[in-house]
Image (cartoon, rainbow, N blue to C red; front, side, top):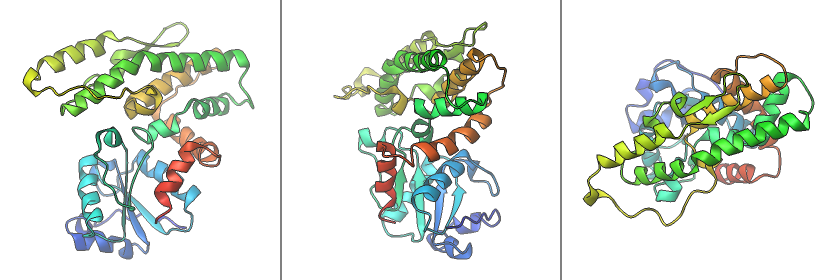
Amino acid sequence: MFFRWKSSHIEMFTRSNWGLTNRARFTGARYTVFVEGGGGNAGQGSDDVIFWKAVFARLRPDLALTLKPLGGKPQLENIARKVALGQVENTIVAMDADFDEILGEKIVCPRVIYSYGYSWENDALAFASVEAVLERLVKVDTLPPNISSAVEESYRSCLKRLEKFINADLYMRMLNSSLFPRVSNGNFIRHVPQTLEPLVDIAPLRQCVVKTMSAIPRGDRIAKPPVSIVDPQIYLQGHSLMFLARKVVSYGVKLFGRSLNVTEDLLVQAIIPVFSECELSSDSFIRSHYERMLAPL
């Protein structure tokens, strides 16, 4: 398997179905894999590239690929529909699932693949992986039980407080609106200054729900979904989950008596290898999901 990065002339290869089909041949690959991020600008990187590269490298090392970020999900969905209709060949589209499966909006095609959870962040940031990253950052084989328990309880309790708002986000999505993109993560995910213990302030979220829903005429509101989300770690918006995970890891570092600036870049660079080594190398439902996605290729 190889990955070759080409930053020039990307626009030439995305203007037409012919260009999309032949981009892989131009780069010497079997497939071009388009992912989210990069703003569609030539040469721009994306966390999604790192994640999907790890998935393919672990589960389908036989495939010759180039990975290219192409912007937001609407841009990817446009290409995915062409792939599904057979208008574009030699192309794979890999993107976040969001609420698409619940809403019946997934594009069904062997070369259109999705994350298991809301986003790749949700798949990568299971607590076991977060704990493994923390162990690497503080350079120990295994966390002391009291620190492990405190960090896990903090992570799970914050997610539990967000559960009803994730369900509100789903309902608002059904009404062509949203919740979490409207509220800055730092406004509702905070920490205790002395200990760095994360906490969730639901007041900004509640205010946003009231304000957003009041702007939607009652006649336009449909019935709420018959199912409820009960696993907030899988369905919390990916950027919000990453922000929370940073707070949780910082809290664990503090409990261990260390001082470390846990940036998003640091956590991304640490969590994806751990995800690959742990989740994708074990008999897990996440691995099973990606194996099913990649098997037809």
